[in-house]
Length: 377
Image 1 (cartoon, rainbow, N blue to C red):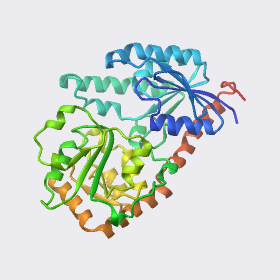
Image 2: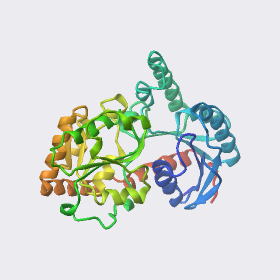
Image 3: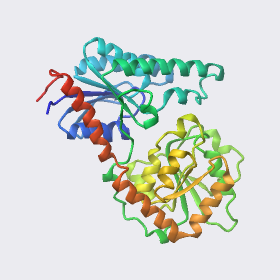
Image 4: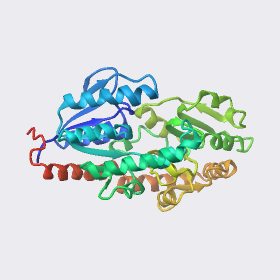
């Protein structure tokens, strides 16, 4: 095997990002490659055999797009890697510069950016269509110039001929449940876990669904994550009295929450960037043996109804969401079976260990095409 020096580059994500660090960087390091992660962070460090090369943490979006991207590029040159793996669209110009220096470049497309732009509220509505078209053109050029494209979903991959689909499924090692309560003994907790909790991800409908539960219901909704706007907590939606905010939870905290959760929610709105996405939280619920209530999108229905692990609903209908919650709470045996169905599906099919093979194949192809690709054996 050709041992490559691989630098992962991000100006947006944190150093402990699940897909970048825990899945991709660790998988490559464990396969024998030398891995560097260049990322906004407080300082350089070594973590699990991976060198964390820190650039200053930006204080604003403008600073990130400008200064941080330049700092990431300078750090990338100093790393002198053979392959550079980019994780953010704003780093595409950095990829072009590295290509001009004779380096190999891989672009990891986490999101369907052109469709995502159409829903970004910070971009003026009149400007979104033009920015979306421009983004698609720039990414298309990157797809032609770069040495490898890694796409998180099949829908994204269709935009990049020859792209490798590496889905963001959970790690098997994290599916070990931390002393879970037997399902029938769990309190009636409904959980939603996300880094950012937004209106587009169903915040209002989740809260209002809790407000439409029967008056004697003991059900509680746990929001694990950060509200995109703290002012949302003061919206006059009926149901807040049954909602608890757990804030950001680390990976062990998520495991503990899921070990006592009855139902997992993922009721994103039918926006272009969500309809064809593969939400990792869906599979984390499934892997923890928790039945799910998910948006009735065709792709999500394949996962949920195809594996008989939950109920699909109209994500804009709080009454339907409430009805699904109530049904699962009133039918614990059926709900527990759905949870077990989901867990078996993740163990057999929807796990990172299977996806890591595809990532390693991308690098095997690159090293095979580049006989002098920074062999550090």
